[in-house]
Amino acid sequence: MAAPLLTAEIDIDAPVAKVWALISDFKRMPDWSPQCRLMKPLGAVRQGTRTINFNRRGRMFWPTSSVITEFVPDRKLAFRVTENHTVWSFELEPTASGGTRVVESRHAADGNTTAVSAFLVGKFMGGTPSFERELVDGMNASLARIKTAAESR
View 1 (cartoon, rainbow, N blue to C red):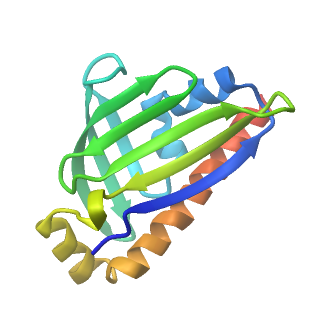
View 2: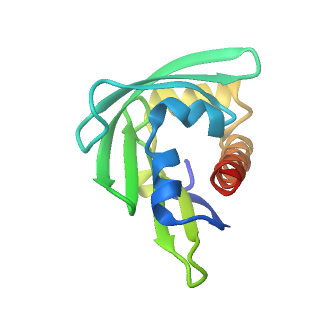
């Protein structure tokens, strides 16, 4: 059984609009995520848009697809992965200092993913607890990369 919620957050010394521009540009997702190698939206990025994704972990590569479930400019971007039914999201809020707090989350409804996903994680990715620690580490790495990009421009 998967954790119902995995989350990481970071404060970025850049305005919300600047951080939003980085996060909502799906072509840049491989710049942030250690696992994502491609995230291609099939049309304009908005609620309902589908994406084709390609992921890598070591020598393993696998495709996924997703659909954007929430798109609220400068506030929230969420997408549901078709293959495992998890929902990934980025939520942004302004900080008192004029920066941005970003929370990245992975939601698995009631701790459930698909049977195929659970099998593959158990068989090829070290089991759910280990893989989920890796996902949280990846979220923290993604947020740190977004912070670096937002604060350097």
